[in-house]
Image 1 (cartoon, rainbow, N blue to C red):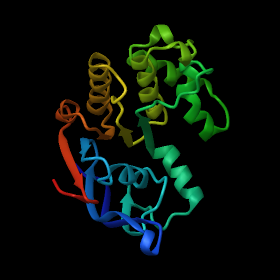
Image 2 (cartoon, rainbow, N blue to C red):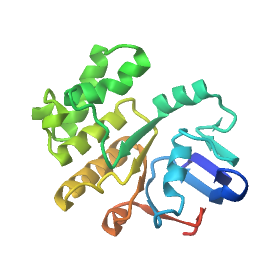
Image 3 (cartoon, rainbow, N blue to C red):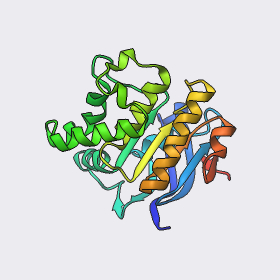
Length: 225
């Protein structure tokens, strides 16, 4: 495997002076292309902050971050927005779908943002992704009418829409029953194997972590294991 991304000596501090809170404290991490890794650690350990930095949603206070050969610290806001749309997908615990849109419209949305419109090719890919997620009979359903597990599978399909190299998943099964959680993880594992998409999955669930090839433990703002 080759490195998809690497961060070195990463610090993130919120606030200044006596009210400053140091969340990351010199964190180092290398993520290989094609990995399916779990991100573990107690609440307050820095996991969510790390995900927002890796997702280019915020910048660290100091340190280096290189992804796909690009210096993500030096990049400007527009560069980061374009890079994020092309190379990074997101799956959240609360799927953040547009409830009045159909499953297909939700999945195609990232492509429509990039292209400025929905294209026939994007709709074809959206249908294919939803079919792979076992939702062929729900493609034109408003997502408000879907079950929790179905909504999360739509969210996974949406994250994959632009064929990103990296998908960041923050507690993607935390709001699901066990059967639905396993179904979502089976689909993530299949995409990882078939397409080589890299997944970093933040979770408190040891069973979910055990389905990943690697477990990365964060504590007190650094990688501890």
